[in-house]
Image (cartoon, rainbow, N blue to C red; front, side):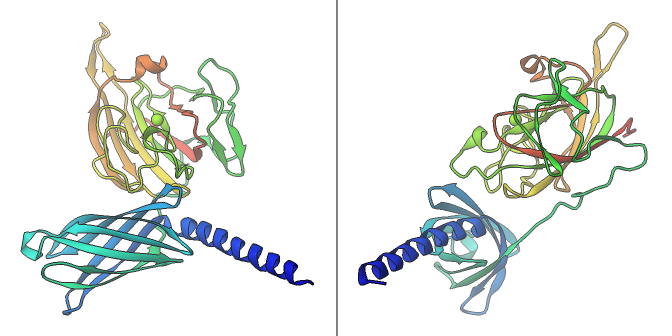
Length: 334
Ligand code: MG
Protein backbone atom coordinates (compact mmCIF):
# COMPACT_ATOMS: atom_id res chain seq x y z
CA UNK A 1 0.00 0.00 0.00
CA UNK A 2 1.50 3.34 -0.98
CA UNK A 3 1.54 6.48 1.16
CA UNK A 4 -1.38 8.23 -0.65
CA UNK A 5 -3.60 5.14 -0.22
CA UNK A 6 -2.71 5.07 3.46
CA UNK A 7 -3.68 8.71 3.89
CA UNK A 8 -6.95 8.15 1.97
CA UNK A 9 -7.80 5.14 4.14
CA UNK A 10 -7.08 7.03 7.35
CA UNK A 11 -9.11 10.03 6.15
CA UNK A 12 -12.13 7.93 5.16
CA UNK A 13 -11.97 6.07 8.49
CA UNK A 14 -11.85 9.42 10.33
CA UNK A 15 -14.86 10.72 8.34
CA UNK A 16 -16.84 7.55 9.07
CA UNK A 17 -16.04 7.90 12.79
CA UNK A 18 -17.33 11.49 12.82
CA UNK A 19 -20.50 10.50 10.93
CA UNK A 20 -21.15 7.47 13.14
CA UNK A 21 -20.42 9.53 16.24
CA UNK A 22 -23.00 12.13 15.27
CA UNK A 23 -25.66 9.55 14.44
CA UNK A 24 -24.90 7.59 17.59
CA UNK A 25 -25.19 10.69 19.77
CA UNK A 26 -28.54 11.56 18.18
CA UNK A 27 -30.03 8.07 18.41
CA UNK A 28 -29.15 7.47 22.04
CA UNK A 29 -29.81 10.95 23.42
CA UNK A 30 -33.51 11.42 22.67
CA UNK A 31 -35.71 10.15 25.49
CA UNK A 32 -36.16 10.16 29.23
CA UNK A 33 -33.27 10.68 31.63
CA UNK A 34 -33.34 10.46 35.42
CA UNK A 35 -30.77 11.28 38.06
CA UNK A 36 -29.64 13.61 40.81
CA UNK A 37 -28.24 17.09 41.32
CA UNK A 38 -25.51 17.25 44.00
CA UNK A 39 -24.62 20.59 45.61
CA UNK A 40 -20.94 20.94 46.50
CA UNK A 41 -22.06 21.72 50.07
CA UNK A 42 -23.85 18.37 50.48
CA UNK A 43 -27.38 19.22 49.28
CA UNK A 44 -29.01 17.01 46.65
CA UNK A 45 -32.31 16.30 44.89
CA UNK A 46 -33.82 14.41 42.03
CA UNK A 47 -33.47 15.67 38.47
CA UNK A 48 -35.08 14.44 35.25
CA UNK A 49 -34.72 15.48 31.63
CA UNK A 50 -36.69 14.90 28.46
CA UNK A 51 -34.19 15.23 25.64
CA UNK A 52 -35.69 16.17 22.28
CA UNK A 53 -33.98 15.90 18.89
CA UNK A 54 -34.80 19.12 16.98
CA UNK A 55 -33.00 18.09 13.78
CA UNK A 56 -29.74 19.17 12.11
CA UNK A 57 -27.75 18.29 15.24
CA UNK A 58 -29.78 20.53 17.57
CA UNK A 59 -31.11 19.21 20.88
CA UNK A 60 -33.21 20.54 23.72
CA UNK A 61 -33.64 19.18 27.24
CA UNK A 62 -36.70 19.93 29.37
CA UNK A 63 -35.49 19.64 32.98
CA UNK A 64 -37.45 19.01 36.17
CA UNK A 65 -35.57 19.42 39.44
CA UNK A 66 -36.81 18.88 42.97
CA UNK A 67 -35.58 21.76 45.12
CA UNK A 68 -37.04 22.57 48.55
CA UNK A 69 -39.91 20.10 48.08
CA UNK A 70 -41.13 21.70 44.84
CA UNK A 71 -40.54 20.75 41.20
CA UNK A 72 -38.95 23.44 39.04
CA UNK A 73 -38.60 23.40 35.25
CA UNK A 74 -35.66 24.53 33.17
CA UNK A 75 -34.48 24.29 29.58
CA UNK A 76 -31.08 23.44 28.11
CA UNK A 77 -30.19 23.70 24.42
CA UNK A 78 -27.22 22.46 22.49
CA UNK A 79 -25.69 20.59 19.57
CA UNK A 80 -23.85 17.47 18.60
CA UNK A 81 -20.10 18.00 18.98
CA UNK A 82 -18.17 14.91 17.89
CA UNK A 83 -19.63 11.94 19.76
CA UNK A 84 -21.25 14.12 22.44
CA UNK A 85 -24.13 16.53 22.78
CA UNK A 86 -23.13 19.70 24.60
CA UNK A 87 -25.95 21.65 26.25
CA UNK A 88 -26.36 24.76 28.35
CA UNK A 89 -29.31 26.55 29.87
CA UNK A 90 -30.99 27.82 33.02
CA UNK A 91 -33.44 26.76 35.69
CA UNK A 92 -35.33 29.04 38.07
CA UNK A 93 -35.62 27.33 41.47
CA UNK A 94 -37.43 30.24 43.15
CA UNK A 95 -36.22 33.27 45.09
CA UNK A 96 -35.92 31.34 48.38
CA UNK A 97 -33.17 29.14 46.88
CA UNK A 98 -31.30 31.73 44.85
CA UNK A 99 -33.48 32.21 41.74
CA UNK A 100 -32.02 31.41 38.35
CA UNK A 101 -29.12 28.93 38.07
CA UNK A 102 -26.96 28.25 35.05
CA UNK A 103 -26.32 24.71 33.83
CA UNK A 104 -23.77 23.12 31.51
CA UNK A 105 -24.11 19.49 30.43
CA UNK A 106 -22.74 16.82 28.14
CA UNK A 107 -24.38 13.64 26.89
CA UNK A 108 -22.05 10.84 25.84
CA UNK A 109 -23.70 7.50 25.09
CA UNK A 110 -26.04 6.74 27.99
CA UNK A 111 -24.48 9.25 30.43
CA UNK A 112 -25.60 12.84 30.97
CA UNK A 113 -23.30 14.78 33.28
CA UNK A 114 -22.85 18.47 34.00
CA UNK A 115 -22.44 21.35 36.42
CA UNK A 116 -24.69 24.07 37.78
CA UNK A 117 -23.98 27.37 39.54
CA UNK A 118 -26.11 30.10 41.07
CA UNK A 119 -26.38 32.59 43.92
CA UNK A 120 -26.59 30.08 46.78
CA UNK A 121 -25.10 26.81 45.55
CA UNK A 122 -23.09 25.10 42.86
CA UNK A 123 -22.47 21.47 42.07
CA UNK A 124 -22.83 18.66 39.55
CA UNK A 125 -25.58 16.64 37.89
CA UNK A 126 -25.65 13.01 36.84
CA UNK A 127 -28.44 11.36 34.84
CA UNK A 128 -28.96 8.01 33.17
CA UNK A 129 -31.17 7.12 30.22
CA UNK A 130 -34.34 5.32 31.27
CA UNK A 131 -36.88 3.47 29.17
CA UNK A 132 -40.40 4.16 30.44
CA UNK A 133 -43.20 1.82 29.43
CA UNK A 134 -46.95 2.18 29.63
CA UNK A 135 -48.44 -0.16 32.27
CA UNK A 136 -51.14 -1.15 29.73
CA UNK A 137 -48.71 -1.95 26.88
CA UNK A 138 -49.54 -5.38 25.48
CA UNK A 139 -52.87 -5.58 27.37
CA UNK A 140 -54.76 -8.68 26.24
CA UNK A 141 -58.34 -8.31 25.02
CA UNK A 142 -60.59 -9.51 27.84
CA UNK A 143 -63.50 -11.94 27.42
CA UNK A 144 -66.18 -10.34 25.27
CA UNK A 145 -63.82 -7.88 23.61
CA UNK A 146 -64.03 -7.14 19.89
CA UNK A 147 -60.55 -7.32 18.38
CA UNK A 148 -60.20 -4.55 15.79
CA UNK A 149 -56.57 -5.21 14.86
CA UNK A 150 -54.51 -8.19 15.99
CA UNK A 151 -51.33 -7.28 14.11
CA UNK A 152 -52.21 -9.43 11.07
CA UNK A 153 -55.73 -8.72 9.81
CA UNK A 154 -56.54 -5.34 8.23
CA UNK A 155 -60.09 -6.34 7.32
CA UNK A 156 -61.98 -4.79 10.26
CA UNK A 157 -61.23 -1.36 8.74
CA UNK A 158 -62.15 0.34 5.48
CA UNK A 159 -61.80 3.73 3.82
CA UNK A 160 -64.45 6.39 4.42
CA UNK A 161 -66.13 5.40 1.14
CA UNK A 162 -66.16 1.70 1.97
CA UNK A 163 -63.09 0.52 0.02
CA UNK A 164 -60.57 -1.99 1.47
CA UNK A 165 -58.16 -0.75 4.13
CA UNK A 166 -55.16 0.71 2.24
CA UNK A 167 -52.81 0.97 5.23
CA UNK A 168 -49.53 -0.93 5.07
CA UNK A 169 -49.39 -4.19 7.03
CA UNK A 170 -46.06 -4.54 8.84
CA UNK A 171 -44.94 -7.30 11.18
CA UNK A 172 -47.50 -6.97 13.99
CA UNK A 173 -48.55 -3.41 13.13
CA UNK A 174 -50.27 -1.28 10.48
CA UNK A 175 -48.94 2.02 9.21
CA UNK A 176 -50.99 5.05 8.15
CA UNK A 177 -51.02 5.80 4.42
CA UNK A 178 -53.62 6.05 1.67
CA UNK A 179 -56.30 7.96 3.60
CA UNK A 180 -58.30 7.79 6.84
CA UNK A 181 -59.76 4.42 7.81
CA UNK A 182 -62.89 3.62 9.82
CA UNK A 183 -64.22 0.53 11.49
CA UNK A 184 -66.72 -1.45 9.47
CA UNK A 185 -68.70 -1.97 12.66
CA UNK A 186 -70.64 0.71 14.56
CA UNK A 187 -70.51 1.01 18.34
CA UNK A 188 -72.36 2.38 21.34
CA UNK A 189 -70.55 2.98 24.63
CA UNK A 190 -67.17 1.28 24.82
CA UNK A 191 -63.72 1.00 26.32
CA UNK A 192 -61.02 1.03 23.63
CA UNK A 193 -57.40 -0.04 23.98
CA UNK A 194 -54.90 0.80 21.26
CA UNK A 195 -51.16 1.15 20.86
CA UNK A 196 -49.39 3.60 18.58
CA UNK A 197 -45.85 4.51 17.58
CA UNK A 198 -45.01 7.96 16.27
CA UNK A 199 -42.10 8.10 13.80
CA UNK A 200 -38.98 10.09 14.59
CA UNK A 201 -39.41 13.27 12.49
CA UNK A 202 -36.72 15.44 14.05
CA UNK A 203 -36.90 18.20 11.42
CA UNK A 204 -40.70 18.53 11.64
CA UNK A 205 -42.55 20.89 13.97
CA UNK A 206 -46.05 21.36 15.37
CA UNK A 207 -48.87 19.52 13.60
CA UNK A 208 -46.41 18.02 11.10
CA UNK A 209 -44.48 16.04 13.73
CA UNK A 210 -46.01 12.55 13.64
CA UNK A 211 -49.69 13.47 13.31
CA UNK A 212 -52.56 10.99 13.39
CA UNK A 213 -55.65 10.71 15.56
CA UNK A 214 -58.55 8.64 16.75
CA UNK A 215 -62.01 10.01 15.92
CA UNK A 216 -64.56 8.78 18.39
CA UNK A 217 -67.99 7.73 17.16
CA UNK A 218 -71.20 9.62 17.76
CA UNK A 219 -69.89 13.08 17.26
CA UNK A 220 -66.40 12.50 15.95
CA UNK A 221 -64.16 14.02 18.64
CA UNK A 222 -60.50 13.61 17.66
CA UNK A 223 -58.13 12.26 20.28
CA UNK A 224 -54.92 13.70 18.90
CA UNK A 225 -51.84 11.61 18.11
CA UNK A 226 -48.69 13.73 17.74
CA UNK A 227 -45.06 13.79 18.84
CA UNK A 228 -45.44 15.99 21.93
CA UNK A 229 -42.58 14.46 23.91
CA UNK A 230 -40.82 17.33 25.68
CA UNK A 231 -43.08 19.93 24.00
CA UNK A 232 -45.78 22.14 25.47
CA UNK A 233 -49.27 20.78 26.01
CA UNK A 234 -52.07 22.59 24.16
CA UNK A 235 -55.34 21.92 22.33
CA UNK A 236 -53.43 20.36 19.42
CA UNK A 237 -50.84 18.25 21.23
CA UNK A 238 -50.86 14.51 21.89
CA UNK A 239 -53.81 13.44 24.02
CA UNK A 240 -55.77 16.63 23.36
CA UNK A 241 -59.40 16.47 22.36
CA UNK A 242 -58.44 18.41 19.28
CA UNK A 243 -59.30 22.10 19.37
CA UNK A 244 -61.29 21.67 22.61
CA UNK A 245 -59.20 20.61 25.57
CA UNK A 246 -55.52 19.85 26.13
CA UNK A 247 -54.53 16.71 27.99
CA UNK A 248 -54.44 17.37 31.76
CA UNK A 249 -50.86 16.01 31.78
CA UNK A 250 -48.29 15.57 29.02
CA UNK A 251 -47.83 11.80 29.32
CA UNK A 252 -46.03 11.41 25.97
CA UNK A 253 -43.20 8.97 25.45
CA UNK A 254 -40.51 9.65 22.84
CA UNK A 255 -41.23 9.01 19.16
CA UNK A 256 -40.11 5.56 18.07
CA UNK A 257 -41.53 3.97 21.26
CA UNK A 258 -44.91 2.26 21.62
CA UNK A 259 -47.53 4.26 23.54
CA UNK A 260 -51.05 3.42 24.68
CA UNK A 261 -54.48 4.98 24.83
CA UNK A 262 -57.20 3.47 26.98
CA UNK A 263 -60.34 5.40 26.08
CA UNK A 264 -63.73 5.08 27.74
CA UNK A 265 -66.37 6.71 25.57
CA UNK A 266 -70.05 7.16 26.36
CA UNK A 267 -71.70 8.17 23.11
CA UNK A 268 -74.27 11.02 23.05
CA UNK A 269 -77.87 10.47 24.12
CA UNK A 270 -80.84 11.98 22.28
CA UNK A 271 -84.52 12.39 23.13
CA UNK A 272 -87.39 11.30 20.85
CA UNK A 273 -87.24 14.59 18.98
CA UNK A 274 -83.55 14.12 18.21
CA UNK A 275 -82.27 16.72 20.68
CA UNK A 276 -78.99 15.80 22.36
CA UNK A 277 -79.59 15.18 26.07
CA UNK A 278 -76.03 14.10 26.92
CA UNK A 279 -72.78 14.92 25.13
CA UNK A 280 -70.04 12.37 24.52
CA UNK A 281 -68.36 11.64 27.87
CA UNK A 282 -64.68 10.80 27.51
CA UNK A 283 -62.16 9.37 29.97
CA UNK A 284 -58.67 8.72 28.62
CA UNK A 285 -55.51 7.18 30.01
CA UNK A 286 -52.38 7.97 27.97
CA UNK A 287 -49.58 5.58 28.82
CA UNK A 288 -51.53 4.73 31.98
CA UNK A 289 -51.85 8.40 33.08
CA UNK A 290 -55.31 9.97 33.41
CA UNK A 291 -55.45 12.87 30.92
CA UNK A 292 -59.24 13.41 30.65
CA UNK A 293 -61.67 12.45 33.41
CA UNK A 294 -65.32 12.14 32.30
CA UNK A 295 -64.98 15.19 30.06
CA UNK A 296 -68.21 16.19 28.27
CA UNK A 297 -66.85 16.66 24.77
CA UNK A 298 -68.46 18.93 22.18
CA UNK A 299 -69.13 18.38 18.54
CA UNK A 300 -66.18 20.07 16.89
CA UNK A 301 -64.79 18.12 14.01
CA UNK A 302 -67.69 16.03 12.71
CA UNK A 303 -68.51 18.26 9.76
CA UNK A 304 -64.89 18.56 8.79
CA UNK A 305 -64.56 14.79 8.52
CA UNK A 306 -68.08 14.04 7.34
CA UNK A 307 -68.33 10.86 9.33
CA UNK A 308 -71.08 11.54 11.84
CA UNK A 309 -71.89 7.96 12.75
CA UNK A 310 -70.97 5.36 15.33
CA UNK A 311 -67.71 4.17 13.85
CA UNK A 312 -64.17 4.76 15.08
CA UNK A 313 -61.86 6.43 12.57
CA UNK A 314 -58.06 6.51 12.45
CA UNK A 315 -56.54 9.54 10.78
CA UNK A 316 -53.97 9.47 7.99
CA UNK A 317 -52.35 12.89 8.31
CA UNK A 318 -49.58 12.00 5.87
CA UNK A 319 -47.16 10.76 8.54
CA UNK A 320 -46.25 7.04 8.90
CA UNK A 321 -47.75 6.54 12.39
CA UNK A 322 -48.12 2.87 13.36
CA UNK A 323 -50.90 1.13 15.30
CA UNK A 324 -51.26 -2.29 16.89
CA UNK A 325 -53.21 -4.25 19.52
CA UNK A 326 -56.56 -2.49 19.03
CA UNK A 327 -59.54 -3.93 20.86
CA UNK A 328 -62.77 -2.69 22.31
CA UNK A 329 -65.10 -3.77 25.11
CA UNK A 330 -68.64 -2.70 24.21
CA UNK A 331 -71.28 -1.21 26.53
CA UNK A 332 -69.27 -0.08 29.55
CA UNK A 333 -71.52 1.20 32.31
CA UNK A 334 -69.64 4.15 33.93
MG1 MG B 1 -54.47 14.44 14.15
